Amino acid sequence: MNKKAIQQYFIALGIGMLVCGIWQGLELAIEGEITHRSVDDIIGLILVASLYFNFKSWANK
Image (cartoon, rainbow, N blue to C red):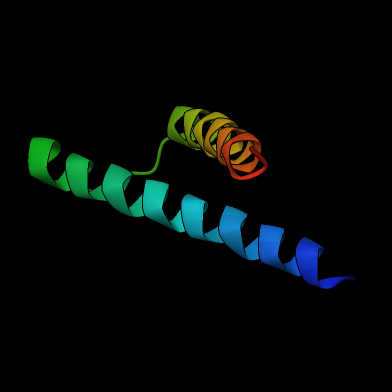
């Protein structure tokens, strides 16, 4: 595994953690509790993938 692959892995991990933190914070603020739903996992995964590829495209400019 080269340095660039490791760097991209950590960027994706950071984006995922940021999305999860914001998502759970909003659930707590709006609903008063954090609940696990499968639809949240699917939407979160799509959002993380989209943000990662957009960041990767922006960084390569």
